[in-house]
Every structure is written in structure tokens, then in C-alpha cells.
Length: 417
Image (cartoon, rainbow, N blue to C red; front, side, top):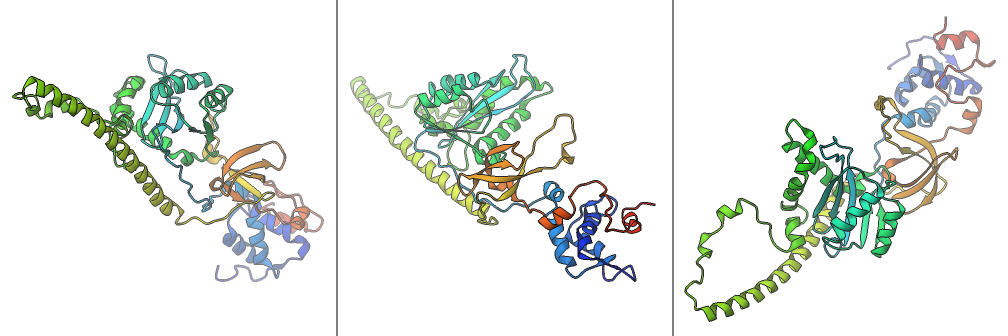
């Protein structure tokens, strides 16, 4: 406002400042938990004290409710790309999709594994996603069909943290690494594939969406034989060493090869055939190794370019042990309007710093402990000044009238009659 709407304003003594701020910011009829500028203008039109702006800023920024519900643009946490590995299936990502519509065969979920080097995907439709189902998939569909892995990357799901998965990882003498909580982008390769496979299924499903498990092998194959931007090749070739022949290829092959070398004598033909086989095997081996090396370099270049883009607006802020924070906690409550629930919970105290990006936190009341929280899902918690807090405890209800604040003034600013 350019000027006061009131000719006279009340000069507020220091003892009443917290109560006035509570009325003008926290209370429903007069405050509304608005921002600094709106709260200051509203206070300025009615009251005066020397440190008014400073106190409004302090009060609003330390409001627990505002910190929990208002949008926070987090620019913390630079990107840490996951290395692709040195051979196919040395490093794999594991995830599940679902629950999906139950099919005629009773399937409701998709288990997914992707190789970080070749980008080759393996999928399987299953009825359940128990730890035993996942371990069975890893052994029969991944290890026995392709290769044992050195590193397994998954989220923090209980079925992934089970004893049977631990035993399988130990048997492979491998390592199991977990992504950070509520940060799907730390498993970005698998998450992107999940979105793509769902999109492909939607594209080919007709009215009966319960047939998705019939289409799953087909759309997975089409993904594997398609060009991948980061490797500049396709997953099928990088994994198997030859390009997949599609049905249409049978109709467009060069028929001139059928009669090739028919005029050559039988002995010479046999010798030439053996020579060609040896040369073919040698060339395939060399070319495949080169292709995988090129794919790895292409992945690293793509990761480097994306890191520059991702980090362009990020800062280098870090939390330290003992600091307070709030955590973005997007829990879905079935049957409720989730948009009206606070997205930030806390406050929490930093109890362990895994690295500059990942932390373990504990709620101040000791009832909740969260591990592997990414810094992009955290924001600093501003505690209310102890003097303010001791004078007036923050809440969303109508504050009790104190002896210090006259009844007529208290009732007037709370809208009482």
C-alpha cells in the first residue's frame, strides 16, 4: 500500500509484538498465513513499532505451517551420474511397475531389469512381487540367461531389502546399492524405461487393457532393437553382438546373395567357407568390443552434458550434523484429497551425513527415522525465536487472550462482536 488506510495506528510495546504477529499472520480471520510483503502491509496499516519489518520477516520465515505447506524451489544437490559399467549386465537396475489391471492370467505387476551399459531391458509379468518372486526372476531370467551382475541398483522397497535378495547378492559376490528416498531420478534409467513401456502398452491396447501381459514381450523387444540416444546404437546389438532381424527384413534382403559364388568349385568353396567363418567370427568380436567401448563413451558424454544442464541452476549447499530440516514426504493417502495435505514434514535433525547429497534424519519427537534422503528433498527449517515462542506458542486456533492485550483490541482484530 502507498499509504495508511487509518489515520491513527497503535504503537505496540515489545511484550505484545508476538501476539500481534500471531493475530496478523497465523489466525484465519486476520492472517491467513500469507507471505512477508502482504503480512507487513497489513500490520503497517494498523500498528507501529520500530523493528516492524525485521520482526515480520522473522515471524513469517519461522512459521512452521508455512514451511510445511508452501512451495520451495530447491536448488541444492548437483547431479552424480551412475557409471555405466565395463561389460554387459555388470551393473543393472531393478524395479517393479504396478499394480496394473489384473489380466486373465492373474498378472498385476511387471518386474524390470536394465543393463546400465547396453540399456538392454528384461521384463516379466507376474502375479506378485514378493522377495521370492524377484529373486526367482533375477536368477532365472537375468543371471542364467545373460550374466551374473557386479552391482545391483534398486530403491528402498522392503521386497528389495529382504534376506533372500541379500543372500542372492552375496552369492554373486556383488554389491547392492539403494537409491535415495523419494528421489526417483536417482534411478533415472529405470524410471524412464518404465514410463516408455507403459506408453507403448497404452499405444497397442484396445478396449481391454487386461491383455497388457500378452503385449509386454513384444513392446520390450521393440525397445531393445530400437536406437538409443545415449549409446548411439541399439541395446540388442550391444548385448548379443548382431542386429536383430525384423519380419520386414525377410522381404527386403538382397536376393543376389542366394546365387553368390555358385560357380566356384566344391573344394575351393569349402575352403573359402571355412576362411569366411573364421574371418566373420574375428570381425564380430572386434566390432562388438569397439561398439561397446564407443557406447560407454557416448553414455559418459551424454551424462556429462546432462550434468552441466542439470547443475546450471544448482548451488553447493550442504547440511551438517545437528542442523534442522524439513523433508518432502509425498505420501499418498488412499481415499483422501492429497492436494490439501502438507508436502513437507518435520522438523528433523541431521544425524548422519553419508555424503554431500545424501543424509539420514530423525524427527525431533523421535517417532520417525528416515535414511538416504537426497538433499533436493530437504530444506532448512527455520526455528522460531525462543523469546517469541515462549511468549506465544504457535498454533492455528484462535489464541487465548492474555492480560496484556486489552479485550476490545483482541476481539476487534479477531473479528469478534
